[in-house]
Image (cartoon, rainbow, N blue to C red; front, side, top):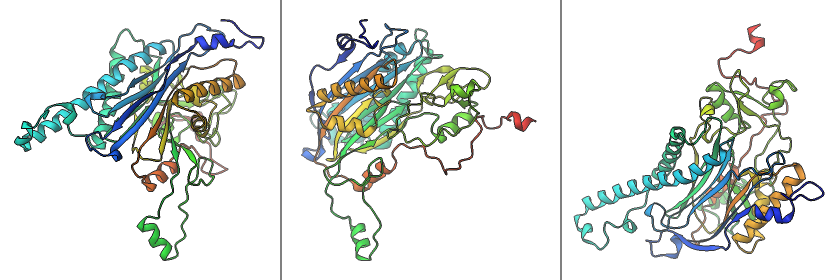
Length: 449
């Protein structure tokens, strides 16, 4: 590829590496059977991906990919499914494309089965219902409850992972993929995640009337602060648009993930620690994922006890069969939220976007854009620029951007809960005792002596 005087790709070379939407597309999702505007979600969306550049491997394939089914996903009227996959390892490209092909199929099949069973039960209970027009058509099947939809998502991830292991054409021993997906069903969005790709909501703060409980507190003089604050603790006011993470990076930075991995027999340490350049510990400082940018480049990783592999910087994924024995599994973390009028922007993206851009910066870029296609282009440009500021290489960069309009009222308690549950890994105190990076039950050298 042609390089400029600084050793970076020429503009025309960068353009060759970009693919995706050529225009913004519009769809209507939500409860299409209700016959009311409140149940509908008007969505505009676009997606783009940019192949990374590695000086030592200038022709390396793009290991990112994405999937979009904009309507009738799983035969559901008003249903859609969006997903981003970020492959890693020598066969990461194959793993990501396998997941793109199989995960939606497993999920759609499970959703159809569950909804068909509900419809059959409905018709058995009311024989006259079967005489109505299109009684057996999927457009008239009942909606699934939240927990049932989430169970379908969880099963689809696990089945996809199992199928990847069993497919001899996909060499996933030391390769795999992240998978962040958003399914729209019955006016809800369900986010399922393994790995460190993200889904971030751009929420427009609403003017809200006090709830009965809040009015009661004011009457008795309880001045408990219920103000909303953004990721950096700044109070937000009506009209502001704030970033709310709907997924949490699954990495060894998280103590809960470290504990789980160590119970499975993993050793957790950075490359410098493994090579003896710094002492073994588990105090990587105060990290607020999505707010802070990690520019050190030496994160904690997952290793076999007596070997220098697999070295994954994430704690869950599809594939990575060697890591699976150490706790790197495909069990997704799932969040479901009703789509309400404050929900204006949704970004689903690989870590190529979020490596050097905070969640709020990403949402701000989208908010300043004319449409999702413009937002995708701007995100790719901003992400690429930041990669050049910090690295000699650039990772693959992929994003799906949705602009949403809906008139359903917000639930302030739900919004506060999501904002308070933002991604963060905090030190318990300034004098945090360093935890030894050993699996539970394994003695350290000091203990043995």
